[in-house]
Image (cartoon, rainbow, N blue to C red; front, side, top):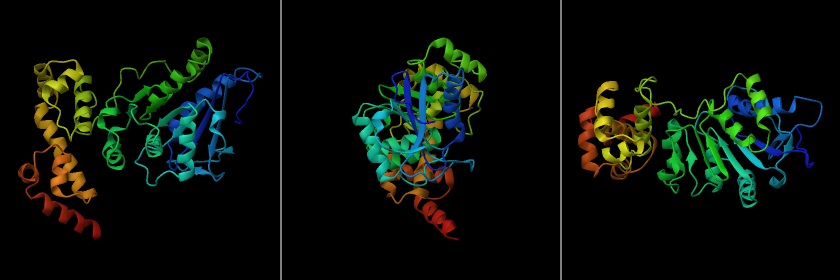
Length: 332
C-alpha cells in the first residue's frame, strides 16, 4: 500500500523487511492495519508500505517472498519505521544504505520499531543507545558479542515487549500484535481498533503479563517468577547477580526464590546460575577465539583457574581440551 501524504491519514508506517524475516511478525502488524482500512470505501486512518534499498523480492524465513513497494527515499514521510527481522540471529549485516537511512530517521524524530531480530539492525545503526531494548533470549549471547558497547542493563530478555520513548521492540509472537495496538491506539479511535481486533480473534493486553519462553530445561508451566529469574540469570550471566539482587528484581525475598527453585527445578538459584554460566562458557569456547581468561571474566568467574575447576567437574575435561575437540569436530 502506497503511503498517503494527505492530512486525513492519522499515521504513516514504513516497513523494512530483513532477509529471512518472520512472516508471522509482519502479518501480526499488517493484518491489523488492513482491517482498519477495510471498514469502508473511504481512505483509512493508516497508510503503510514496504520499502527497501532495492526493489528485489525479500525472502521470508518461510520462503514466501515480498516485493517492496518503493525505495527507501525520505524517512520523514513516515511516522514509524518498522524493521521486521526473523526468528534467528541474522546471518548477514544490514546494508550501509539501510543503516544510514535508519540514522536519518532517528535524527528526524521518527519512531523506530524492531521486531524479532530487527533489533540487530537498529543496534548496528547506532540508534538505540541508552534505550531499553527487547532481545530474544535465545539470541542474547550473539547480540552482546556483536554489540559489546550496549550494556546488558539496557537489554530486556524476560519480557516480550519494550517501549522506551521513541524506540519500540519485541521478540515476536503475540507481542507483535500487542506492539501494533500500542502504536495504533495513539492514532485510531478505540472502537475501531477493538472492532479490528475482534475480527482477528484477539483480546487486547493478552501478552501484558507474559514472559519470553524460558530455556528448554525449564518447564513452560513453571511459575512466572521462576521463568523470569532464569531469563535474568541468562542475561546477567557475566555479572553473576547475587541472590538478594535477583530476588529484589522479582519482588520476592531470597528465601521465597530459593523455595520456588527447589520445588519446581529441584535445585537452588545459585546452582542453576552456575550451570548457565558454564553453558555460556561452552558456547564461547566453541564460537569465539577469546582467551580462556577472557571467557572466564565474561562468564562471571573469578579467573581462568576458577572456570577450569568448575568446567572439569561438569564436563570431565579442561576448557582448552574441550575447545580443541570442538574445533576438530567442526573441521571433519
